Length: 183
Image (cartoon, rainbow, N blue to C red):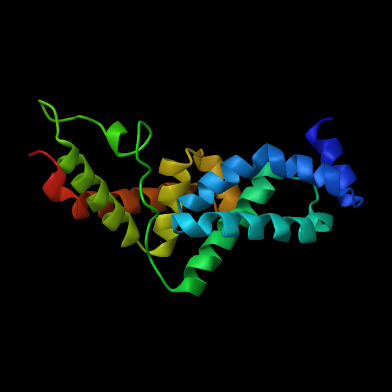
């Protein structure tokens, strides 16, 4: 069954159809919220986002993809969660091949594991210190890999605003991480 049919059935009250939609996107939504809240809170935030989506399903008009709509709900839920919890911390970088061990080896010679962990912590702190609107853009682009257009649609802002915020966020990150950059 295609997504449009699942959405139509879910809007008609078919919980199993909505369950299939959740199954299709839960890993991606969980990855998004892990980049925005503490690791141990991510599942709660993702579940909260899907519950909001279920309640708001009658409002989904099909002008965007269902995933984009749920992504926006999840992003807003995570931002609200962060505000409510009054903490500003980027989620820990994962360990293993996709995390700190995957950081670019841009200096000649091997970096020690301790240096990689220090750099990962410095990046984490720099992202943590970004204002909320920059933090969100960085997470959506650099962690989630969304295109400028997808970010604009998710946050309901223009592509130009995405570009300028991302530029400013990267400038702030460069400044915060200047001690780690080679001359």
